Amino acid sequence: MSQPIQVVDAFTAEPFRGNPAAVCVLSSPRDEGWMQAVAAEMNLAETAFLHPEGATARGEPTMRLRWFTPKVEVDLCGHATLAAGHVLWETRRLASSEVARFQTRSGLLTATRHGDEIELDFPAEPATAATAPEGMLEALGVAARFVGRNRMDWLVEIDSEATLRALAPDFMKLKAFKTRGVMVTSPSSTKGIDFVSRFFAPAAGIDEDPVTGSAHCCLAPYWSQKLRRDELVGYQASARGGVVRTKVAGARVLLSGRAVTTLRGELAGT
Image 1 (cartoon, rainbow, N blue to C red):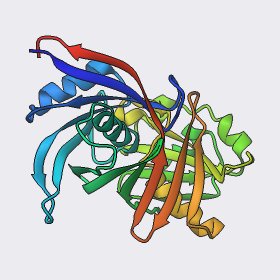
Image 2 (image 1 turned 180 degrees about the horizontal axis):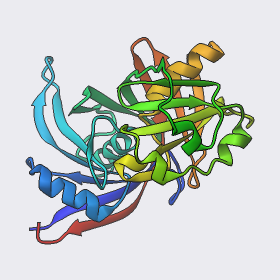
Image 3 (image 1 turned 30 degrees about the horizontal axis):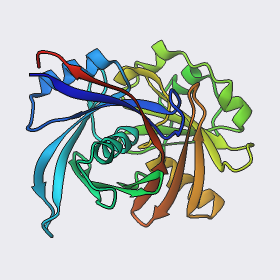
Image 4 (image 1 turned 30 degrees about the vertical axis):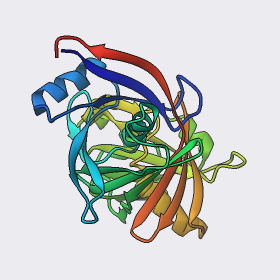
């Protein structure tokens, strides 16, 4: 038996931009060792595995969704969730008008299709002010305006988009910090963009993530408070780049973006 697998570029309308995620739609659960081995083989920031499981209190069908980097399973991932929804609609497992509902380590998450865009309903993950661990700012090579952290990551605000784009962190030093990742952000100097960011996660096996949806669960409330607006546009200024539209809605953050499939294949002998 072979297992279908697709690669989807998320938070972009152009192939080979945004953030690629592999998506495996399974008929039933598989063991963690197999999923971790597949994620290592794919060697992308995340591989998403999903299969039918249960229903909401109102009887709406849900799917179990798990995300693996090449090294570890993670608690929350935006781009691979967007990619998973895209695959469900593209393969007609869901009608375009249906909501994708996912049971995850971070609770129930939904994805809704609005024309060419997909909207994710995620928990807000605000950062609280904290003292940077010794050596972290030196590893990033930055002077910080603000440092904070949430349950997953560190947040560092710096002075400008130019400084952010020029960052060249020492990944070996960053790898020593026991955190999923470090997001660095600044105000945008680009028309139509409110804030910019980059995301570094060498401890999770990813030196720099191209576009990190879950980081915007922290970035959106942070910049919403500073800019006094609920709806903002973020740009992750990695080499591939990607746009994430955000809306803060109380304890939730709505993340919107586009996606495009770049590869369809099969895992042989699985």
